Length: 348
Ligand code: SF4
Image (cartoon, rainbow, N blue to C red; front, side, top):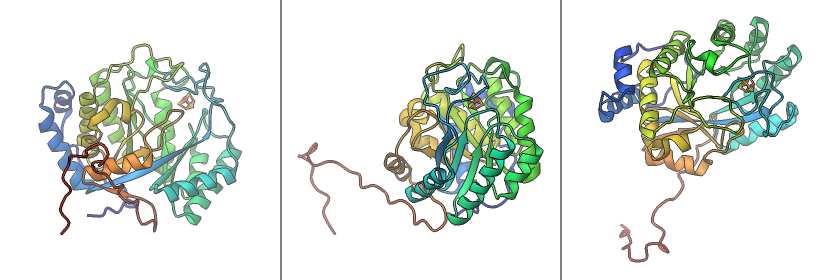
């Protein structure tokens, strides 16, 4: 089944209620039972497709905000800082992302939010990338007001990323310069302008199970079309006082709950998938239906070849943009040098 991703997000009803979500997260429900329920919903709404996203950090550092999980926050140091890349450099990054096999190109810039001039500049780029490369564009540039949201929508922006990150109750523990309501405000402006919402969570910021359930339902309420599920990476200089110790099983249970509460959303394996899900990544892809390739903001991640092997090994299909014919499955198998005693499969 090939999905029409251009269709408006329909928002299917949740498959579980709060108490069932709690039972999945506190491991009262056996993993195989919860997993099979979520895998069934994933197959129903997303088929076998896996959407591949590539991030481009178009501006790094220089941020006045104080998000405790972020290496670019105002009092952190140690990350490379650079101003907004030139339009040509960003366009070239987008062209390369398309050639590599990206379905969506995600431009991310640090800072509280774009100025009027920057918004207009980004709008021109969005228009050019969408039209000349036929690549879907997602922008993550911080807080925007009604007018800026309108400018971006008119440029043809497919999605805007602005994560809710955690619950309203827990927000004070992760950031001192803005709050949950500020984040919702930006998302409301974009939704009203007609831009699809990409908004997700960071798991492991010292939140409770209840906080995770709250944010999963908050994302449902705003009709988030895509939900990146990040697992906290303790970057040098972070200000999260009590990060949660995450196990691969718990991370998988979180993905299951996000899928079952938001059955037809694009659930994405985002930052930290490699280190936190570890050998459960292929199982996680049978619950989620998209992922990032080639790293995250200031942190390296799996390369395309390893990611394609993961997708193909799980019996899934990578989806790229436009007329790109799709990445080829890498040839895998036993290396004869390491296993000289193995018999060869007979040729038919
Ligand atoms: S998440 Fe964005 S707004 Fe917050 S500190 Fe990092 S760059 Fe700044």
